[in-house]
Image 1 (cartoon, rainbow, N blue to C red):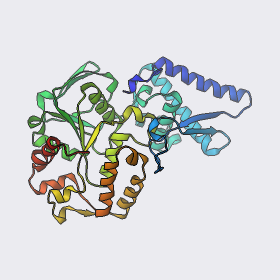
Image 2 (image 1 turned 135 degrees about the horizontal axis):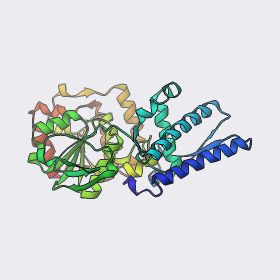
Image 3 (image 1 turned 30 degrees about the horizontal axis):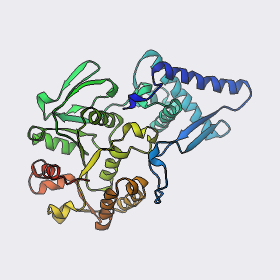
Length: 361
């Protein structure tokens, strides 16, 4: 987990912040232009030869911010403002969200994305994860099933009501005493599918834990999923729509996101298996033509770009084959399309048969 990073105690981070600010002040006093060196990371490239080092978690170079360039001067100004807020959070042992930070200087920041970028840059400079800065997300994820745990001394008992969704914990580093008799973990892309499984009492009939990130998973959802796998050593399956967005969400769980590539090794879940929906499922399960939607030009462009990602070629070539098949067939469909057979087909037939039959990649 991220908590295994060294030198991420508040006292260590505050020392590093002082070192950075002291260096900038010394440059100014000496008449030198201050500069910041920020390591750059990526979790994939488009090198089809397999000779890249994207999976090594090493930085690929450095970006140098200098005051002489106007765009760099603004970026340094924003970074230092956010760094001051982070320092205050650590000193006072308080937590704040990215949105809280934005509203402390809205006229300066102007948009949330510049704050997000500054936080990522600070994590790289301090060699820590975002939660180490006491910057937290409002968790979007939901969990239900055969699970009990404590977070910051509070007990959460999902087992007492197996088919009720609970919010994924925000302070994952404070989750302890995890207890489960589940056989596997099922990750579903969308809340609508999560609720379908809850209504069908899926966890009653199948001893499992179900998690959804409600679309692209946020950091707490990914951290919590990783923690459960590490502590419980359970197989984990992922169910997404058969479209480029579903596939991209699947790869975010498996490989991490490019935006947070510096922290990918602490967030990714390499154990995850793709359960579906596969392009071939439309024929295998007899989906009528009305359930299939043509790929848009944007869909095709996204698929073509994803096919170039090095990790598909190197680590999951079977995933790449299915993505090629999606492009060749030219149609997509949602998981819910399986309800054409019956409302509970997904929970009573599709998922159990795939898991029991080992039909996953």
